[in-house]
Length: 110
Image (cartoon, rainbow, N blue to C red; front, side):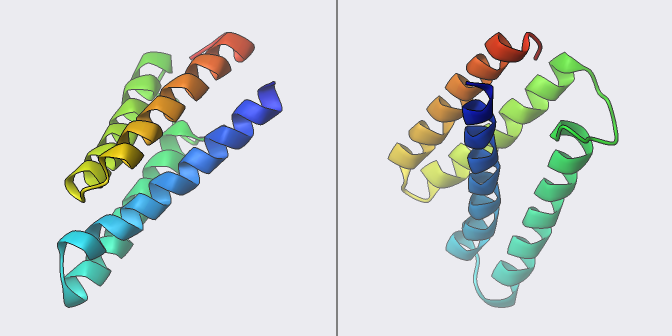
């Protein structure tokens, strides 16, 4: 069960990256869209890698990590929602929430 939940978590991380690349292209134009996509994706990758990944460099505690993770998935869902994809936004949030519950239940920690 743990390996499946971790595979789903990795898929959700890929979804976050995809949304961070897609969102600026949908809402901006030209060079601004390209720069926005690159900047947003780099910021997301650095945030996830430094604070949320299993091999994170900075330990911020379980509650702060949970809030940061919820914020990232909420921003991604908001981006999808404003782009007219409310169904995808709802699915992203639902899967992220359920997967987090499974991980907490299996691992015993947030």
